[in-house]
Amino acid sequence: MNSRVSLDISLKILRQNYIRIAEAVAPCTVIVVLKANAYGLGVEGIAGELAAAGATRFAVAELNEALALKSLDCSIQILGSVLPGEIEAAIEASIVLPVSDMDTASRINEEAARQGRKATCQVLVDTGMGRLGVLADHTVDFLEQVMALPHVICEGIYSHFPMAYRSGSDYTQAQIQCFKEVLHACEERGIALPWRHMANSDAINNFPETYRPPFNAVRTGINLHGSFDIEGQRCLDLRPVLTLRTKLASVRRLPAGTYIGYGCTYRLSRDMLVGTICAGYADGLPLALSNRGYVLIGNQPCPVLGRVSMDYTTISLEQVPDAVTGDDVICLGGEGSKAISVEDWAQLKGTHPYEIICSFGSRVERRYVE
Image (tube, rainbow, N blue to C red; front, top):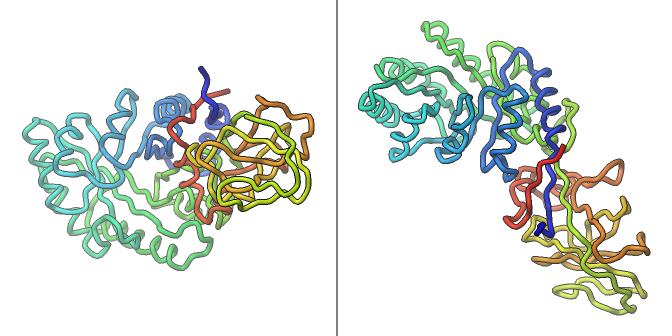
């Protein structure tokens, strides 16, 4: 039995987006970021498609996400942190590990020695994120200590931006300069680092110097889906891959004065044709659509009436008087000027597109389509 709500993911557009990003940042390598089950879209289907399109390196947030990708003949890198209890399995699986403190580096070295092999790592530098990483002023000395460990191969260095979505940000420019100074100091000490990356999706659009020397790689996740942060530029010609669909559950003509939904936040000012669709906030529809958003039936906007509930949402059918139960409803996606984007929902909710994409419920069927 098909699910009442489905999320269609266009593999063709996904491939096109990857190729366009790769062409835009060439000769930098594109590191594909697939955190949180590919932002909730299903990591197996997404990763396999991107590997077939030419991606050779994938990045995730933690060990279980990395192990889920080991069937791919690609390099898998953890960007966040590795815990002591995860080191053994990570080294056994040849995962590229993040290091930013000597305690973790020493544990990795000891476990690699026990396994009779060498572990590969990259050093995370905190240039202003304030979350994880070795401080910039300590990086060169730290690198020398790590590279002296006999069972550790330090193949690269990277950092992260908190505000690259804001074009012209002085804070971001200062981070770039700081990281370049670290790289220059490494070069002066004779430290060779094959991988050097800082750009995320936002930086690719807003700070093109982050995919030019001395950088030789970029990281991108949300841009692959054709989504952008609400702020900043959209330099890349990318298309949305997502369409959230459901069905019309009922069609009724209700009299003037009828209240709609929890809290009675909407009252019909006149007799009106209304419908109820089989999707609510448990499926990923933001509560902020209440009395503000719309869905599409036959490419016609149908405003949301009242409060979005967990399983259902009531809409006006005045624009589609011939609608019948079972009709297709597009909650997110569509074509042309009436299309509903991830960014539209993010703006209504007062959040960013990442949260929208990660919020589709477990009963929403993910379907990969051409």
